Image (cartoon, rainbow, N blue to C red; front, side, top):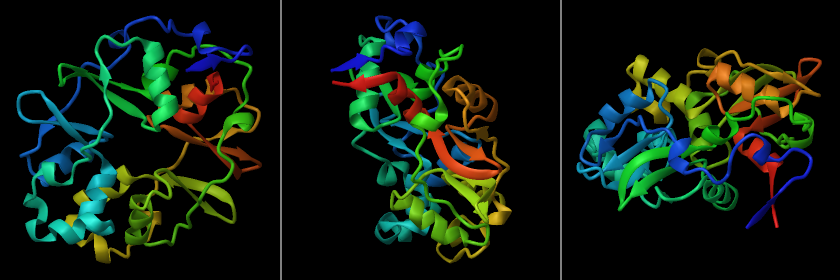
Length: 277
């Protein structure tokens, strides 16, 4: 169970007794476990962050993420297991199978408990094992539409890993698969110059026809990084939500005098509004 903070509660922004279906995304892109990895890569390269995988009859069997794909393409152990299949391997071989779900009869408060306890940033909403929607952390925090009085400085992650623009793509991908980070600020002399994510790497590999060359891809990430939005210290978490909406990203660097001081994520924002007993 959890209790709500008295300073700026989520209840001021969202009715926790509403059905999860009221705020979930019902327009979802899925694939079947028999679909090819190459086809799924095409979907991810368009900026889709996760793909629910079904048995072909809407029953959920797993979820495919960009990290699963990087793992398979050569940045992790999946490559060693399935490399002989090439890009014609089926999605079912590499998907994340043990995905946690939320029942369609659940309320928003149930979803919040899941986000806080299970460390998963999204949940398929199911009805008798069939997927009907997806609820993500964004579906929660997008309802924050005014200042909260909570500063990003107080809730951001301050112990962050940063990268140099000259680091090679294959090494960065390997670090992502090992779970060291998923969103990586790129800095030079501690000054932020951009961000890189698993989706950026997949998009680069696909556009340059290098999907089969990740293990040996030594291109410096400076060719992949995208200019990042940033927040200054002292900003309200409402400002972080606004920037996330504009940029379409779920992690925003926090800077002071152009130097990076931390990284605020959707998870940080939810945890700032809700505490566990």
